[in-house]
Length: 180
Image (cartoon, rainbow, N blue to C red; front, side, top):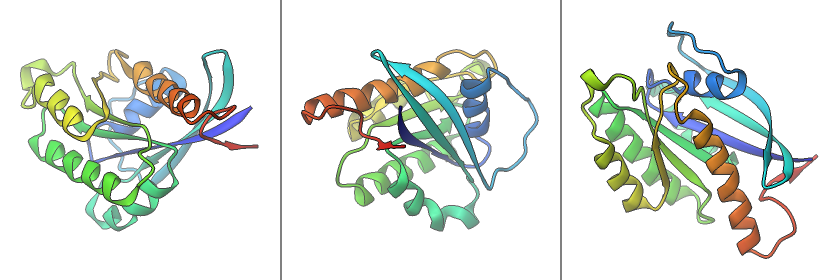
């Protein structure tokens, strides 16, 4: 079984932890507790292959921005989150994407996620705007609702499939991952 590391980045309060917990355990908690750093693991089967996905849930608050480049460097793939009801978090997502392309020359799979898609009455960022940003930087895009569980699995399985495709394109025999 292979191992891959996914790093989840975004501004504070956008729902990074909720997204990860919904994927890993199928649960949702409405309360907000700031994260310093948490590590989750889930076994994932993609294209007939089995591997362990380690997910690093990062802090979104300003004092931890200096650690961002370190997190960007350790991820085999990255998830960048913003909340559809927060223009500030969308601008932060753009800055994170720019940092990824500055720090990483190997073009890791990246998924831009508009979280809290169930909050349609509070929407400030359209899905079209999210897709345009993703197209601009060349990454995957989806909106997701951790509350409803919609499109959460799509994000992480989409990253796995991108890793598989990238590995096949590089003519290698297995994933872009470190082995146990």
